[in-house]
Length: 130
Image: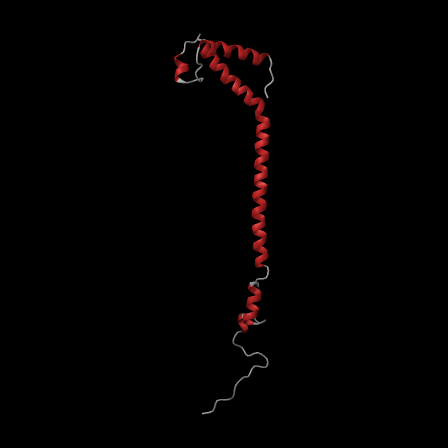
């Protein structure tokens, strides 16, 4: 909320003076450029633009703080959702055997190097005679 002060009173007087003459064009527009420099509507358009800037600068810190808080909350919510998905994925794979466990199942404790060698207790076959 913009407090009523001497600046606002001065601006209001200039804006009303321009509106009394007719439609006040937007500052910088083609219609504004066609107005004479002493036309109260040209002054009113400049004052409206200046007041808009002044109001914005007075409200800007609070508005930015609100936008930043909202962005922070949104980011935290998205992070929590993504973390939840990642944690669920880890929990699903927790019971999956590791590569080392799979290798031991497949090759035994000796690893691939021991593949094909007789193990203790293996039947070694019989002598071949011709």
